[in-house]
Image (tube, rainbow, N blue to C red; front, side, top):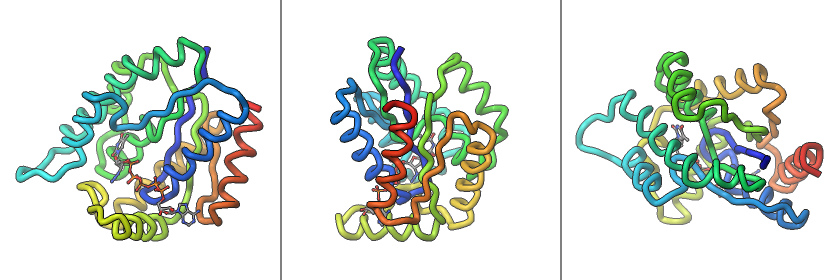
Length: 210
Ligand code: Z5A
């Protein structure tokens, strides 16, 4: 039946680093898997990612942002996620709909009922089997993300430029959802060292998939 694993957290929490740990562990254990990300994951969805995260001369409305996230998700689901799950694979997705609740509802203030309607339309009953939430204070995460952007000569995207209060609201929704969907979520203390975070992740994987 496959297994749907998502990785969430505020910017710079260490999702990319965590994804590498998860993929290495799956490989070592002989699981079949694919890795994807949101927004993105297919050529069309990656174009939608560039649109939604890029800078524009006009103001991007909150509803436009929300719909672009779900448009990309719909494509990733039909092209990659659902076929891989049907083939019995583990799907590792860097962000999914929990991010929409955190950013578009928590951050932007969109009513979560409106998100729930789109969630049902686009996903039906599909929900992650497990979500690793890398939890860290936004100040720490943003400092890491900015450090990496400087080191790589990259620029912060449109959402990364939001004020710190935005990311506090994002984190708060993630933690509320982790408490509400305790069977789905594993909260990882991402303020720890990379080695310690890796240990927590491997422990969570062994408990569910080992
Ligand atoms: N978004 C949305 O609004 N709604 C949605 O529905 C979805 C997404 C799906 C793109 O996400 C944006 O889309 C995102 C939310 C929005 N907001 N923004 N902007 P993304 O996941 O592609 O991008 P990101 O959140 O900006 O991720 P990131 O900056 O790539 O961060 P990360 O992957 O969590 O962190 P990292 O690259 O693994 O680590 C950052 C740096 O810290 C790096 O130098 C690491 O070596 C270092 N690091 C990592 N772990 C540690 C520890 N434990 N200690 C010390 N240093 C560490």
